[in-house]
Image (cartoon, rainbow, N blue to C red; front, side):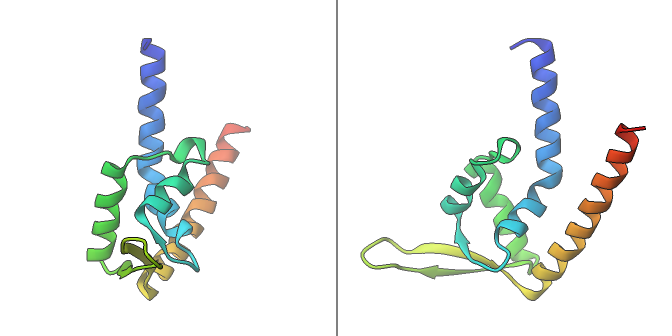
Length: 114
């Protein structure tokens, strides 16, 4: 990998790190999902592809902070899965982060187009 490619990869990782919490909360808005379902969901987005080693610690932290709740559900003969959903505090945090994101994008767009 060239130096430029490495720099681009680092930049992508930093952007992803800064937006991942917002992405997870947005993915759970109005619905519950289990971990692998979230991983698969994020695969459709070039800049949000993450690993289990990144996602599960984030889910655990958000659960400890009261932003998410988790429950085990079993569908049919499948093994039980841990489903995550937003708490009321999580819904409030998502709304706050959405507003901040819109403002940040507007500010950056203004900077980049002047």
